[in-house]
Image (cartoon, rainbow, N blue to C red; front, side):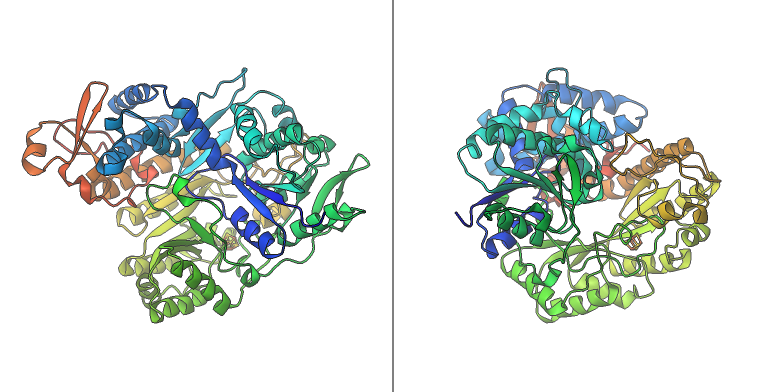
Length: 630
Ligand code: SF4
């Protein structure tokens, strides 16, 4: 039979706020090209399953006690700070729920909505993650959810061994899949694995599917597969997986369907496919890709009302371009890995896509470009304004002389809601050393223009760069924190530098003053090098500085953002003179004997204001004073 149905899946575990873009895009493409395709977001379904499973357990009492305990401490260590921030967010959302009439869950005596929100905020509260001695956890880290089991994600042998141990995920897959796929006769199942923490769950998922339907072809694809898993020579990886797809999936998946339906299937004809043949791992060369402007606007594949997105963040992510026109930063593997060729598609066609989405009712879009071209953004913004399209959008750019005040004001006028920019380091010597193509003077000028225009900036920073001394790192941080204090930078993500495979530093370490250690042969999935020799600070010092800087930024953010906006979420004690005098009380939360009342002005909250990093050092105030622990 020709044109049998296939199934595309997103694997747990990631934030369940929106579906990762790959599956809606591929499903739309496959259907448009004559391949009937079903879709499942197993990530979302996992959270729903947890909610159902845990509905009757009283997990929040313990959470409240823990929050109070952390709140009472003088100082929080790194892990405790994250825990505090996560717990705080849960109760922040309790406030939110009590303001929305149809979510008055306390009155109904059912905690469903609460679990729904909490699963988004901090899954461990809803997850009894201890099954058959498995060592697994789910944590909330800087706006992402991370799953960790026993496996080392850089080792195929470790991944293969790990999935044979029990996990709560197995229980979910058995429960859920038995209802959903046991009776379907799919030609193949594609599983998307964008991030490393989805790899072990995806391999478990493949095993669960094979147990129910041994004949179905299972293909894993996505960034983690292309960059890491596909490099394996370990045949055991293919025990439950039939193939791995490297690079964009549009053409390979059509080819795979064709081969599987052919009377003489030949996997050797599927471009970019990695599979087992005669006990050996075979790799097909990659073929052509479909240009971005020929990829259709993704259909509404999944029911968005089931996603945990109370803040109304962007649901649709679309790329306006791919790759980077600079492509020279010494730490970046974008150009070197070969998976992301530079694409600057037809702007008219791309604009029509945006128009289609806005006409469809999208109010906020995330343009997930690796580096949006400044001039292209200018043309885009002018057209948005000229044609009266009303929507908010965010994207990634480089600091460049083109970021003038006029340019920044145009962005703001056209609905730009934020720009993420790789600042990396605030020191001219290091900017030159990593070949960033920017300078302190240029960064300052761009930040000034963006601040005047009111465009929020999210900055990426790194510490522990090759040859970077502690003194330089502190100087760089000092400049940065002044910009955060001054309101030039809204949020910062400070990461610890590690040498990425295929980056210029990996390919020519000596040029950058780096000596790489020999790679452990067990780690066959091409991890980077977290530890390396150079003349700068030790790895241990870099780890310490990363924590220190992150914590200090959180303190400043808390002061700046929390007092202005998020402060509206603060609890005040019921009956305290200031709350009674100054504010009508819109709602009350009674929690295990604690009566806490919302501030009177809480109804005016903007749900876009929360920032987990900003909450790290916040203290809940139970008397009338609202202050922050510095
Ligand atoms: S870090 Fe950013 S600007 Fe530098 S090469 Fe990579 S994508 Fe381009």
